[in-house]
Length: 404
Image: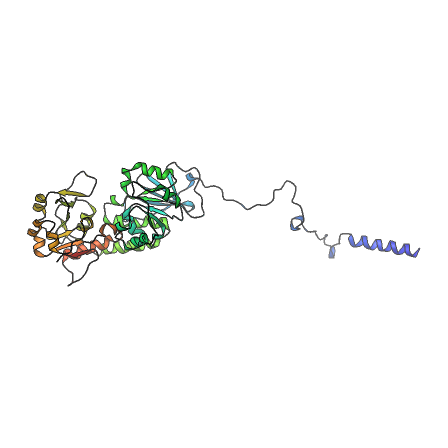
């Protein structure tokens, strides 16, 4: 009987321990843990397991312009910052949407808009005038292929990169090596307007998935408009602030030049292998630089309908218009450098009768003239100092040197 009593007492104590505990001081029962906080609890009925939220696709039509790039001289391109971090570049009738690294292009984009995904690498550069801009930005590593062979570059770093194999020749603009361009995962082809004469090449590159940017800096009316294209390439490469600083340096050189006419007449030309004089047309960017430097171009009334900036003159016409020029600048970037008056007269004996030759005011450009778009402000400054005659004895200029 005692054992039965003990068993009943143990059972009562066990049941009492398992019952819900009453709250202290009249409070309600202590709530049990929520199933959501118990690792072994099953999810609530009809409720999907939690997942990370994903960003909804951005519609192209919903993008708005937040800021436009400020351009002082360039008029052949524009760049607009859009909501979402995108940038729209417009060059003539071509549009390019720059998509930052890690992002996707918006949906419902207009046909004809090329997508440029950053980082932009392995560029095929066929536009020679752009190489100096990449070089100034310390961005030659973004270029994998060139449309010009190493021997054709007067830009030291570009030549060295090609000779060292960091940049390889991939064929000229009209006959590129498509297989090489594709195998190197080219993300952009930069072409000059010469590609307009080979539209099938542009079409083929685009078919292969390579966006083609046609560089139109040669159409800029102001010389520093060409220099300002450095801002476009900096935008693509993420070097905006650096480009702004470089451009401002050149603009400051021009700002510091007095716009007063020096009264000096200037002839800019070279003698072709056929014996004719090749001069720049009025309104060409070279003649504009002469004017900005305070000079008066002797062929100010010369123009024609040709697309190029040059005109061939027979020596009789050239002699009549340039003989009395105060200053001669010989363009060696095409014909090759000359160092002495004797070498110049070897081009044409008629030059011996020119006023500038007699007075020793004959200058020559370096071969790198047309590959140094970045420093046109410095070139205009050089011209201005020559026209004003304020050079020191044996003082050297950046782009021009005197023939002796």
